Length: 256
Image (cartoon, rainbow, N blue to C red; front, side, top):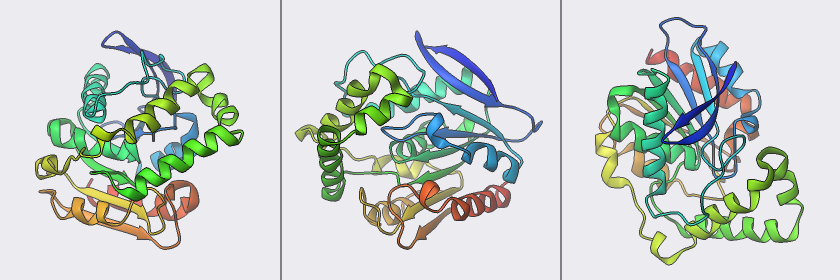
């Protein structure tokens, strides 16, 4: 993969891009609220080969090797703003046939991007994304905050995010647990998604119920499929990697 720092709206984003399959779509990986390029491990490379598609992986602002956030305080529509930034990044790289693979926050950003910028999006794989706030999500966030304060979680995350860890962790936990965030909801955007969608979720997801899946696939305007994995939690691509790889490659091939 070619590693580059790309400036978008005056902010430097770390990217890793492979463009070896001429004329084929680009699978764009969107990490979760504590993730980064490195934490996808081998999945991007394996899916690139299995689906015979190109791959773009990048660190969102405040994560991994990208510039830090200016502040941990985020507006309620921060994921909508991330979708706008992604659109600008795709423009910068001249990508107009993206397959978005997003996990958790990344899955939500993928949905929003497909709704707002349909001309650039080929299809979406949403893994454990959210379209509204649930009590189980807030409990998961609070449990993570407790773990951050009482275990070596911060030290483990520093390996990937350096001195940005405290800022990104506060940005995630304090935004989701704010009173004004409880009414956040993107269901109104779903009707604008016309491209094929695959929603992957673990049946035992500790951050969201299957309502997230059902209400998403029932409201989009395009073809929608769901892949629910029994006994699996919030990170199916790590907990059941071969299942996710196989199902995702099949989905991409079906709609290519």
